[in-house]
Amino acid sequence: MKYVLITGGSSGIGLELAKIFAAEGFGILLAASDEKKLLTAKCSIEKAYQVPVTTYSFDLAKQGEAKKLYEAVKTDKIVVDVLINNAGIGTIGATEQIPLDKDEALMVLNMITPVVLTKLFLKDMYERKDGKILNVCSTGAYQPGPYTSTYYASKSFLLSYTKAVRQEAKQHHVSVCALCPGTTDTGFFERADSKTPKGAMSAKRVAAYAYRRLMQNKTESIPGLKFRIMKLCPEKIKTMVIAMVKKP
Image 1 (cartoon, helix red, strand yellow):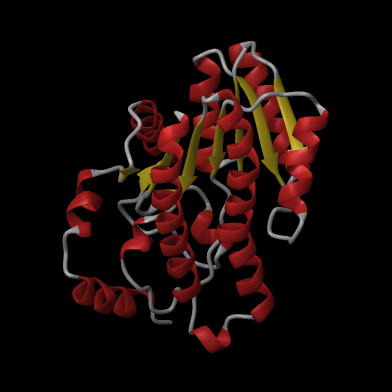
Image 2: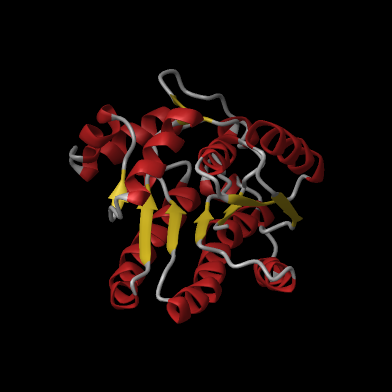
């Protein structure tokens, strides 16, 4: 049986991806910080799809936890065929007013954690000459984000990193892809003390698109035609609009 490891897999896009992989016969590994949500997801998936689900409770917004997750999976002697770095958080507000500890946790979760997990699991995939990695970025990766500056910058970093590693991984027969969703109804905005914008895509729709594109080995994927069109808009205009929309 093949296995997929999904960080942030207890809700939102991560959970919907887990359901898709389960329907395809994959064993599911879910990593998140909320043990209660993990247990709920585990029971739901096992009941609906009759595949094994293993959960790992780690706070991946803390330094060192990503490596502990990798070691826990290795201890369980599970081969990860697909890694999905989905966990992420955002902060909204003027840069100087956002608490430093929140921005530091964001940078760990959105940048350091996916880099650590990619590097560790990539070596195993290279040895087998097989494997897939999906890093969940954002349409925010394509321009600066006033009043959500650290979040947008973190996604720009992850997108650039993903494209670079993809080029390296080709010779080892490993796929490394980026998913760049626009606004998605996942509870993300509520956790950032904001409201989900109107017109947000459903997590289920984003996950279905992401799965299809990953299996097609596409470099980067933007779910939703309107978000693909928005990418073509000049950066200066997008940045100005974001500043007007996000300004408290």
